[in-house]
Image 1 (cartoon, rainbow, N blue to C red):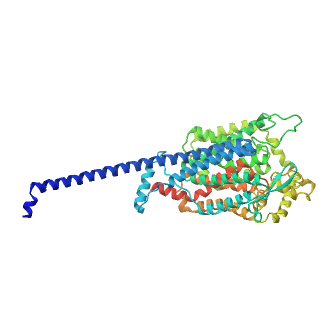
Image 2: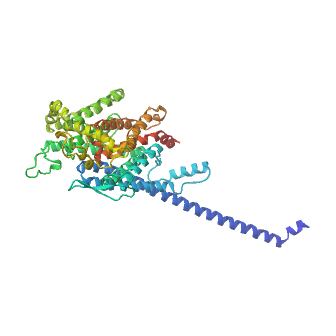
Image 3: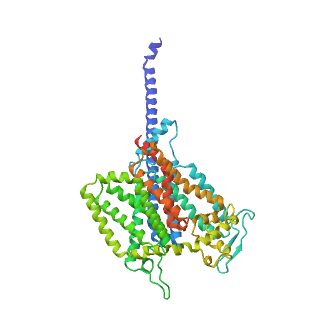
Length: 537
C-alpha cells in the first residue's frame, strides 16, 4: 500500500519539487558563500596592500631622515630640529596606520584555522614575497612608557617660564602645584616632542629590522649619508672654506676653526663620523669579500678611505682617539674572518681594491690639511688639564641633590644651570648651552628616575644585542648581514657612550637619530632568529 502510494505520480512530482527547491537553496547558499569569500579575500588584499604601503612609506621616511638630519646644520639649529621632528612624526603616523591595519581583521577561530589564514595572508602580500614580522618588546615598553609619562608630566605641570631678556623665571599656575614640574614650560614641551619621536624611532626601526631587506636599506642609508658628510668636510677643507657650506664671514667676525662639514663644533662632527665609520667599514668588507657588483665594491672602498681621512682631518681629539680604538676593536673581533675571506679573493679584485684605495687616499691627503688637525695633539697636555669643562662638571655634581628624583625638566639645562655658576671660578663662567657630560646633564634635567630609565633604554638595548649575539642557537638562524651588522652597531654605540662622558653628542638631534636607529636594531635583534624560522616554515 505504502509502496503504491509512493510510486503515485502526484507524490513523485512533490518529491522532485522538494529536491529541486533544496538544490536551488543549496546553490544560492554556495553562491553567497563564494561572494562572501571573494569579498573577504579582496578586503584582505586591500588591507595588506595598505598596511604594507604604509609600513614601506614609514621606512622610506626613516631613510630620508637619516640623510636629512646631518645635512641641515648637523641637526643643531631650531629649524633643523623642527623639520626632523615633523619627518619622524609623519613616520610614526604611517607606521601606526600599518600596525593598526595589521591588527584589525586578524583571522579568528581555532589555532589551525588562524595559522592557515595567516599563511594565506602572507602569500597575498602585494609588496614582495617577504613576510611582515611584527616587533614587540615588553622590556622596551616598560622603560619607554614611564619615561614619556615622567617627561610629559613634568612639562605639562611646569611651574614657570624663563624670560631670557631679564634672566628671570616667571611663575605659572600649574595643574598640580605641589607635584614636580619643569622650570620652563616651552623648553620642556619642545624637548618632549623630540623625545617622543626618538622613542618612536627606536620602535619603528626595531620593527623594520625584522625584515632583512629593510635592515640593509637602513645600513646603506647610514653609510651613504655618513660618506657624503665626510666628503663635504674634506672638500671644504681643501677649498679653504671659512664657514659650513662656504658661507661668508660677516664684517669683523673672526674665522671659525672648529667646524667640519655641516657641524659648527668639531666634537659633534667627530661623534657623528664615529657613529657612521663602523657601518661604512662593514659595508666595504661585505662587498669586497663576496661576489658583488664592482661598482658597489669601488663605492664602499672609496667611502671607507674618505671616512678614515675625514676622522683624522677633523680637529676633535676625542673623535680621533675613539675612531682609532674602534678600528682596533673591529680588527680584533674580525681578524680571523678577514684573513680567511681575503685569502680567497681573486687577484683582480684585490688589485682593484688596492688601486681604488690608494688613489683615493693620495688624493684626499693632498688636500685635507691633516697637519692642522694632528697638530692639536701637540697641545694636548696643556689644554686638556686646564679645560673649563672639568670645573663645570664639578658644579653639576654639586647641583645633583637639588635636581632630585625628577630633575628640573626636559630641555631646561641652559636656563637653570647659570644659577649654579655664580660661585664657580672665573674660567667656568659663561654661557653653557650644553654640559660637556651627557650623563650629568641627563640627571639634572630628568633626575635619577629619568636617568635610570634612559640608561635602561640605551644600555638595555646594548645588553639585548649582546645576549642575541651570544645565543649560538639563535645566531645560526640569522642572515649573514645580521651577523655582520650587529657587532658594528655595538661598537658604534660603545664609542658614543664613551664620548658622551666628555662632550654632548647625545644632545644633538642628528646624532640622537642615529643612536635611536642603532638602538632599534639592537632591540629588534631579539626576534631575528624567530623571524628566520618563520620564513623557512
